[in-house]
Length: 96
Image (cartoon, rainbow, N blue to C red):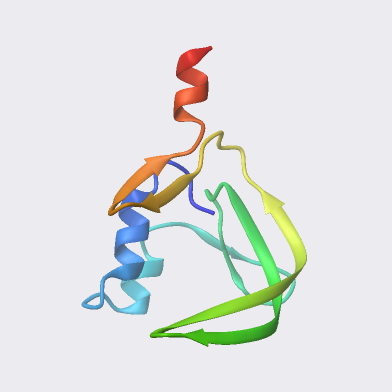
């Protein structure tokens, strides 16, 4: 899960004109036990085993079993909803 500061990285991974090397060059990475890449500055990294895949329209839904969780130090996450990025927890901290 990306932090609230990683909107540019999210955009890079959805950019069809960027190569995979260009996408991964935007951050520092390490490797999880399974060999999967983990973004060092992420809010959370999940190392998963795919249990099932379902096709829904033009998308695939992956059902995964979590093997490892690596939590970062950031305090807010990033979501994309209603055609815009939003930081999770932003309002709750502002209200405190």
